[in-house]
Length: 125
Image (cartoon, rainbow, N blue to C red; front, side, top):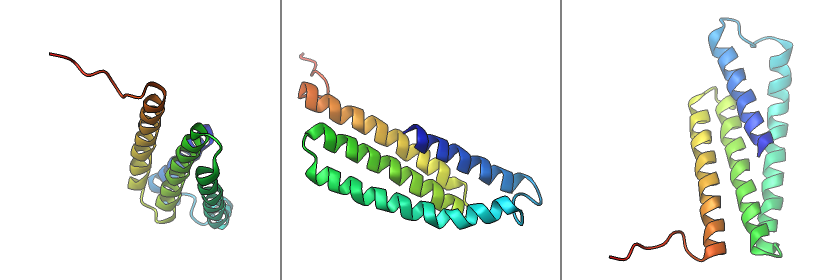
């Protein structure tokens, strides 16, 4: 999870550098490296997502499956952030952060549901 958050922050900083300066990182050696490695990163994330789907289907326990679904959600956050960087739309970073927050809260809710068999106690009147 920390690696995903670091990748989102790096993507946000790169977008800001590109927007703030007239020259930005366009035309520099760093831009060439980023644009060369971007498809490699996307393919690597897709491969990891494939293996996570296998883990969801074959996980020995329910907690392994929940962990795989949570990691799959983190990979989706990375895909959204990388896609936003690819199309030069920093708005996608906000969507990625919102999805990460939703992913975290839903994971906590599902774990609580499996442990206590309830999400909360009903108030009797």
